[in-house]
Amino acid sequence: MDLQIRGAHLYDRTRRWVTRTNGKKLFVEKPIPPVEDVELADIDLSNPFLYRQGRWQSYYERLRNEAPVHFQPNSAFGPFWSVTRHEDIIAVDKNHEVFSAEPMIVIGAPPRFLD
Image (cartoon, rainbow, N blue to C red; front, side, top):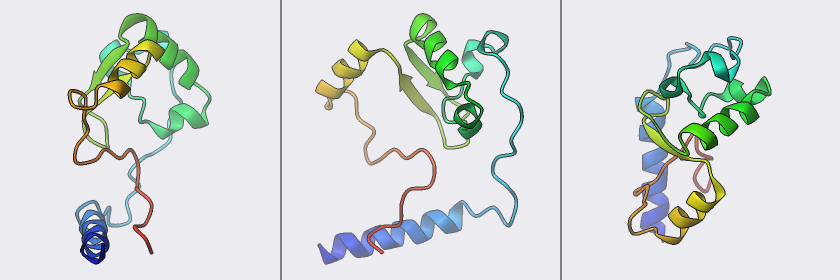
């Protein structure tokens, strides 16, 4: 366990060093447009302002209807898949050998490791 804790601390220090912004903001808030004005490929559920501005529900609804398994290659957090329909989420959850995010997937800064 001691080796895992030291590894987690090393990972956290390295991640902070690699992703440092030198005082620049990673995100600048802009108004989120109505979902019908956005290309399907440009929908990014990792945008924190989507939630703060209360636009998230219409974005999820559009993905459920048009692209229930959606790939976003250009997120600030790196590329990721969004699975938005309940039955698809259950299928993914039950088949972790096929659908895996190993070694980990994190949207946003992870919590400090065992500090």
